[in-house]
Length: 172
Image (cartoon, rainbow, N blue to C red; front, side):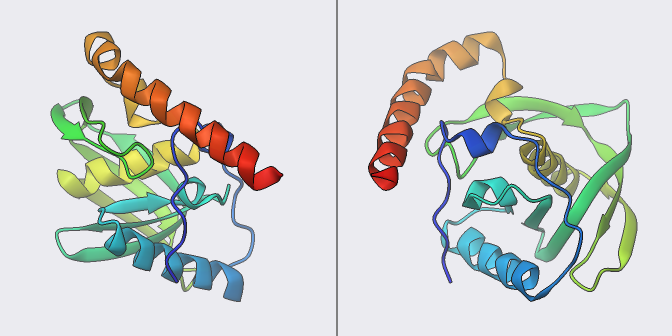
């Protein structure tokens, strides 16, 4: 099932997500729906808050490898960084260069509950960091240069205004 993607301005995107205590049928179904939503969008990653769920989980597909990530942690980051353009399904039409560590060591649970520890490099590392940031209420626009942020500020304000208007409509 395709889920509705939460847009910039929705408070859930700024909350620290809650740890997933039990990998049950609902969590597995949510992950599968998130995969379907991510591919439909199309995107390379989608975190719980982006579908209105303040849970520490994400789906990521880079280089043809799909990961369903539960309770992710970044254990170690390389000093070496690279700068690359990022966008976000929750902030359509906005892009900016973000500097991130090129290599990271991570730990997470897969959908079977198995603990996975691995080293990621390049695009898989970037996507993992982007999605993990979402789980901590951090968006890529928080990491772009002040100049670039000023350049897209009108777009961000317009999106936030529309999101708040939509939320108000939904609650009535």
